[in-house]
Amino acid sequence: MVPRESRTVPRPEPHAPVPSALGWPEARATARAAGRPLPAVSRTLHHARDHVLARPIVALTDLPSFDTSAMDGWAVAGPGPWRVRGRLLAGDSGGEIGVMRDGDAVEIATGARVPHGATAVLRSEQSRVEGRTLFADAHIQQGTDIRACGQECRRGDELLPAGTTVTPGVTGLAAASGYDELVVVDRPRVELLVLGDELLDSGLPREGRIRDALGPLITPWLRTLGADLLRVRRVGDNPDTLRAHVSGSRADVVITTGGTADGPRDHVHRLLAELAADVLVDGVAVRPGHPMLLAHLPGERPGAGRYLVGLPGNPLAAVAGMLTLAVPLLRRLSGRPEPRPRRIRAGADIAGHPHDTRLVPMRGDRPLAFAGPAMLRGLAVADRIAVVPPGGVRVGDPVEVLAAPR
Ligand SMILES: Nc1nc2c(c(=O)[nH]1)N[C@H]1C(S)=C(S)[C@@H](COP(=O)(O)OP(=O)(O)OC[C@H]3O[C@@H](n4cnc5c(N)ncnc54)[C@H](O)[C@@H]3O)O[C@H]1N2
Ligand code: MOO
Image 1 (cartoon, rainbow, N blue to C red):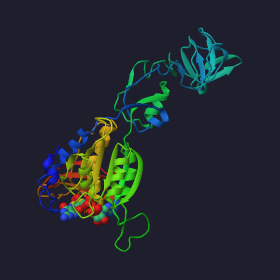
Image 2: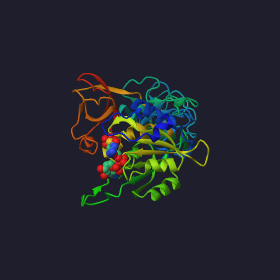
Image 3: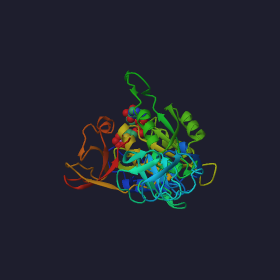
Image 4: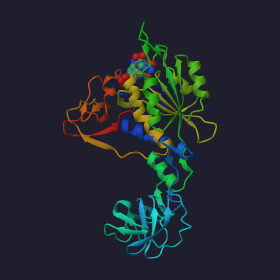
């Protein structure tokens, strides 16, 4: 946590040391530690998608839940030839067949319940029927093409631990093992407030005004981060509007873009002071993105609270703020485990800042051009972001990498 005094320290020049700034690893750790997982909720399988399991998935049944034919053909009992006695399709209870005795055969479909007493399933293409007598064209061993009850799991087995992200494979398995709903960690609700009177929503930049790049960048990214985006608002540079929107927001996390520095229209610090917010991060020793902010907003429920992540306005600096503060916080709130750090070997020298961490868009093991704080051309083709420590890395050195926005 940044000492309170640091909030009153004047903003430094862009390339001067930032004495109050938290180190990049500490800022990330602070963001992660600031949150705790949201409450567990029950969701239908359809709505559980992309949530994280709050409770393990424990099999409610054996799987398969009965001996099942793996092929179209014949359930047979004992050695052949066999007498054909009936037919079973998938979904049939098999009651009318009863128990098979040696020498019996029953025509059976893939997925049908194999009657008691059957010793194997003979595939149709390996069989021959003459009158009501069935012959095998190949030797079949006991148990062939029967999926035994409980082969995949037994009732009560833990199939997936809490903390697993609900993918389509997970919802499929949950359905197969008898679930209608899953208990998952609620997803954080996020509201994005885009500050800046100079921003346009459509058309060409004109007369000193530019297009908003951050709404279109952050909106799709939030979805892949496991957050539910309540709303994106263009707020302009009016402090009263900003205040009303932050105070009135129902989001767990309010993300602002722009207005984090000390310019005449940079209102975020002032707003946090007015709201008596607990500022957890006020500036980070990282380039780009050093004016980024994280604050805990006083909430109605004690401890529940809400968060404000203040991203700098320069687009690549905003991405750095997302990676440093928003991503770890949202991960934690949504119950996702922190991934283990990934390292690659740098394919080229990567220049470092004298005393700050640099976040550098990379393609493969090489840094990309057009990666200035106000540029997105490098990021748009990046597949990862290198975390370059002060002083830089030499070709062949290991360097930590983060996932690029997706
Ligand atoms: N005297 C100082 N000036 C600045 C410093 C400093 O330390 N001392 N830091 C610079 C750095 S580094 C950054 S980053 C920016 C951060 O500024 P703000 O967060 O207050 O952002 P704005 O002033 O609102 O905008 C900065 C820049 O980004 C453009 N912008 C803003 N929003 C968007 C958007 N949604 N899409 C595209 N571009 C956006 C805006 O037009 C400005 O060009 O402060 C520096 N100044
Ligand atoms: O770092 Mo600002 O945070 O470069 O554009």
